[in-house]
Length: 149
Image 1 (cartoon, rainbow, N blue to C red):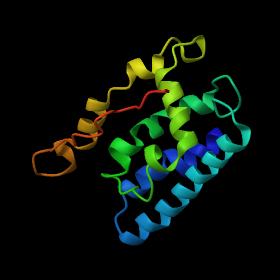
Image 2 (image 1 turned 45 degrees about the vertical axis):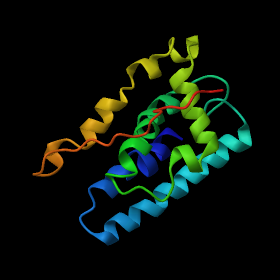
Image 3 (image 1 turned 60 degrees about the vertical axis):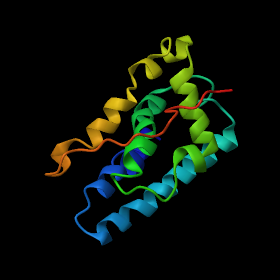
């Protein structure tokens, strides 16, 4: 799964974001969301906290950065806006929240939440290097990661 996720999701967001034509963006955005749909179905079918059961695996670790950045960066700047994780993928959203908030040994005592800095992510994806104009950093989401409650 980690190779499939890498090629159809992790790099696909960049293929959309750096597309030099509408055709190139379109050719990548629909398969990206088909892959997210497939992962949503996988998590729904298996009813587990992580991709392969009740314990974190390398696949979860590799997938996390893309999903953590998805709504705050890739949806807008990279034109990956057919759906959002928060509103359209309830199982992926819960998976993200578990990784972010969990303070167990599985997550090395909240390693994901303590090292995910949304202000820096948003600033990094809107840095002036993207254009000649001064960068304007998006304000939202008001709540970066919703609680598990």
